Image: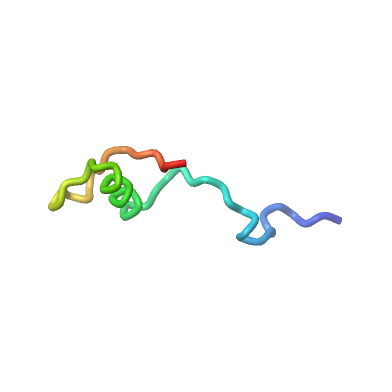
Length: 51
């Protein structure tokens, strides 16, 4: 009998996330040069994670 896919270990589940947390979005914007110091963290532009 095989094991259900939801019970596999975390190391085998490496799906790419579509939604980033706020701090991840800020880091990504800083890396891209689209972030200005003192800018508000609410209302951030939509970002797609780097591949």
